[in-house]
Amino acid sequence: MTVKQLSVFAENRPGRISAITGFIGDAGINIRAISVADTKDFGIMRLIVDNTEKAMKVLQANNCTVTLTNVIAVTANDTPGGMAKIMETLYKDNISVEYMYSAFINPSKNTACLILRVDNNDAAVTALEEAGFALVSEAELLEI
Amino acid sequence: MAKYWNEKVECMSREDMIELQNEKLVKQVRHVWDNVPYYKKLMEEKGVTPDDIKSIDDLYKLPFLKKDDLRECYPYGLLAVPLKDCVRIQSTSGTTGKRVVAFYTQNDIDLWEDCCARAITAAGGTSEDVVQVAYGYGLFTGGAGIHGGSHKVGCLTLPMSSGNTERQIQFMRDLNATILCCTPSYAAYIGETLRDMGYTPDDISLKAGIFGAEPWTEEMRQEIEKSLGIKAYDIYGLTETSGPGVSFECSEQTGMHINEDHFIAEIIDPDTGEVLPEGSKGELVFTSLDKEAFPLLRYRTRDICVLTRGKCSCGRTLVKMTKPMGRSDDMLIIKGVNVFPSQIETVLLKDFGAAPNYQIVVDRVGTTDTFEIKVELSDNMVSDTIKSVEALEKKLSADIQQILGIRAKITLCEPKSIPRSEGKAVRVIDKRKVYNV
Image (cartoon, rainbow over all chains, first blue to last red):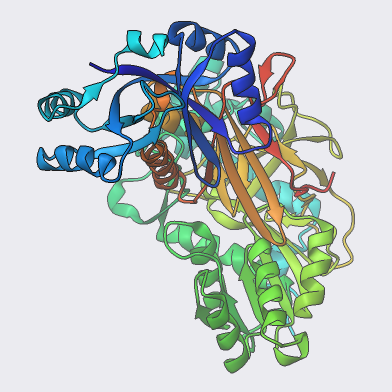
């Protein structure tokens, strides 16, 4: 069970993040999670939205370079060690985390939603489910 | 001090020079016809035979040779002597498609070095001088040609090659170099480094410099002359015709005398191929009269310049060409290296499968050329991780360096971010002012 993430290439110059988020907002699309990875010359903006297909079209129409990636949305207990348990589970199964960030939305008051990009989605999904973690589906993301 | 290396030729009357050229041209056309099937075919296609060429007045009847012909004939197709008679090759940088490999017999080498000896003598060089050769050695003609010419004149020759500027200055000081030979941009850089090391022109013994292999302006000349305390002379040549020394500057510094006993120069309209009258601006075309191994007839240099045949205060009667004022093709000279935009396209095509929109931006910061390639990304080129984008940048950079021999800064851009001019992509932005126009 994975969710779709949009990655947008952005040159490192003023106004780019403003423009990209603006395209999405103007189209009535809501951002559920976001992270920006940056280097000296460029950045990659990763987005999880409530209408991926529409967002993709809107961004492409505005000359953005967009790629689609399947990532995992997992809920962790919002208590000390909640995060560590997820990482430990993945590590034990030899799964590498490329990057991760937290979402704006949470299924409940006592949980936090993490977005994980790993080197092997299938293995990670199995490992996390077997360890009893709740994964968030695309449909669930829309409802929260 | 000898003023000329070969006074008889350099100060020859026009009549005698024409007679000499007539005689050599007839022989050379026969040599090419007999030994280079490729050019023979070009002549046949134009309906010309060696019998039609009786003097230089008939030169216009001969077909042109273009860079494309050289590519088609790579590597041996224009060779006019058995390979066993060749003793050397020199080559330009570039991919196989763009690379020029020129062959030389021992006579060809002697002729070339003799041309360079004339240039060194015109710059005031004698056997008393110490010549520091800071042109690159190796396949590049710069180092080899001047090195040989310096030997001929009997100068003490310092075969430094380019680079390691502090060492250049140390040798210059310790061994009292009097003549520096390198690209003008490197000369300017040596001048800057000299100052940065706390020296003035009084701390070195240089009196002259012979600079070529790339376009440079009068402003640059003045800057170099001041920073090194020298008189700076221009020298011109191309691998196709031998290398530096096809023409050289004298003390008057108002153009370069072409060694007409070896090379006939014409100016043509680059669009029609029509020969233009003296004093017209157009594309320079060379016919080599004495070369044995690689005798190019009517080779189009793509350099735009003007020929003048006035009396020169130095006493030489050899026709003078202006510094190149531009190109009739899209070749750029960056850090002394010939760069064609199509070479960059080749790399992009190879790395991406389809060539994206790109733009080459060349500038000069201080005395150093900067070289940037902007590449517009499309959706299938990047993924969601930084490392994948950086890997792409690195691969492009390495492939460009592999093909051109120089490093370029790769800048990945968003789609449609490179401005188009009337819908047409602008491939090259050259912010340098390297041509005197």
